Amino acid sequence: MSSYNKIAALVVLVSILAFAALALNFLGLGFINNSSRGFVEGSDGCVDFDGNSDARNATLDGGEDEGETIAFRVMVHYVNGDRIFDENGNEVIWRGAGGSYLFHAGESYQEAWQRHLPEILAMGLNTVRLAFAFPDSSPNPDYGVPSADILDFEKMDWVLDFLSQYGIRGILDCHNYNDMFGDFGSQKLIDNWRKVAEHYRGDPRVVAYELFNEPGSATWAPNIKSKLDVAEFYANLTDAIREVDPDHIVIWESQPYVPPLEEIVDLLRPNVVFTFHRWWTDSKWEFDVWSVEQLSYMSLSYAVEYRRKLNVPFWFGEFGCHYPFNASNPEWLLTEQHLWRCEEQMVGWNLWMGRTDINKPWNYYMAFFPLKVFNHDLVRMTWNPPAPSFEGYVLNWKGVDRLEPYRIELWHNGDYVTLKPGIVVRVIVNHKLSDGSVVTVSDELLTLTKETTIKNIEGTVEFPGDWNTKIYIVGKI
Image 1 (cartoon, rainbow, N blue to C red):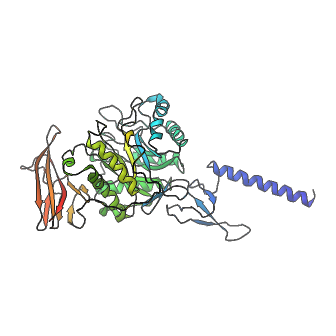
Image 2 (image 1 turned 135 degrees about the vertical axis):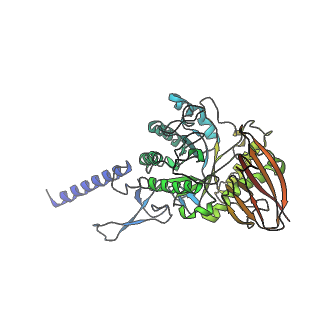
Image 3 (image 1 turned 30 degrees about the vertical axis):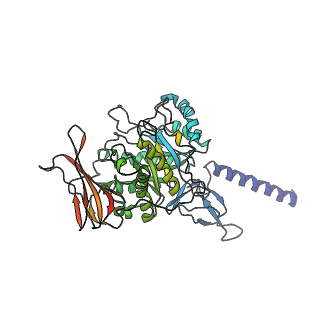
C-alpha cells in the first residue's frame, strides 16, 4: 500500500473511532465525562459539578498539544447563588402545576395525560410536579394505599417522555399526605432515593428531586426526634443521592418542617432549592384585615427575604385554593396574586391540583391565564412589601415553628419569642379540642412599649392538650 493510501486509511479509521466515541457518549455509554452524562464543548455556558457557573477544565493527557483543556457541561438544571439555570446557562423560573403522576388512573394513565395536556399547554407550564410514593411507603388510612401513585420507572419514563415533547420537565416529588408514617429518616428512604438517582442520573427530563413532601412528626422514623433532626436527615439524604447522581437539584422543605433557617445554615448543601407551601383556608379572618394583594406579599416575603439572607433559591411548591373556584372566594383571588408576586420576584411556582383523577380537569385557575403579570425578561422587580414587618424587632426565640417577616407561630409547650418595643402585634391563641376542632381562646392587640416575651403554653392543668399561638405585626407605635 502506498504512503498516500496508508495516510488516507488512517484518517478514515480515526474518523470512524471518533464518531463511535461521540455516539457512545451521546447514549450515556461513553467515557467522556460519563459521570455526569455531559459532553465536550467550549467554555461558554458551562458549569462545574458543584453547580457553579464557572466551567471546569480538564487536561488532556497524551494529546498533540500538552496542556490542552476542554470543558464539560452538565445537561440538567443547576443552582448558582440564589438563582436556577438551565443546561445552557440561562436563568429559568419554574412555572408548574402538580398532582399524582398517574392521575390515579391505573393503566389508563396515558389517556389521562392526553386529556389534561390542553390545560397544561394553556397555562404555559414548563414543569410538572410529579407526585409519587415508593412501593414500600406506608398507606394512607383513608385510601388503604399511599396518597400518590406508586413509582413505576417504566410508567414514569413514559410520562417524562410525553411531557418533554412539549418542552415540559418533571420535578419528582416523594409525596406524603397523611401516610408514609415512620418513613422520613429511615434507611429505606435513602435506598429508594438512591435507586431513583441511579435511574435518572444526568437525565435532562428531570429538573429536580423533591425529597419528601411535608415531613411532619407523624412521618418521622424513630431516630428523628426534632426538627433539627429533620434538617440533618435532609443533608444526609442529599449526600447519599450525590454519591450516585452529583448533578440534579434537590429540594428541601423549609419552615414549619425544619427550624428557623438561620439555625441550619451549616447543614446546607450546594445545588439545593428550598420549597415553601401556603394555604389560607383556615385564615378567613385575615381577609378582613388585609387585602389579597397584601397577603400575597406576606406569603412571598418569607422566600424573598431568606433567599437574600442565605443566597439560596426558593420555589413556591404548593398553593391554590379550595372550592369555589371563582371571585366569590378570596382564596381564589389570592392565588392569582401569588402568581403575580412570583413572576415579579422570579420565584418558581407550582399550583397544587389536589387528588388528581382522569375525569377531574385542571381548569380551576384557567381564568388566570395568560397571566396579566408575566416576567418575559426574567428580571427581578423592586420588592415593595407592605410595612411594617418583624425585621429588626425579633430579639430572641426558642422552638419557633414559623419565623417570617409578618407571621410568627409557636406550636409547642415553652416555645417563645422576644420582641423589641415599638410595634403593635395581634396575638391569637388557639386550642385544639379532642374532636380535632380548633377554637380561638383569645385574640388581642398588644402595643409593645417595652421588651416583651410571648410564650406558648400547653399540656398543663391550666392549658391541657394542644395549644398554639400566632403573632402578626399590624403597625408601629
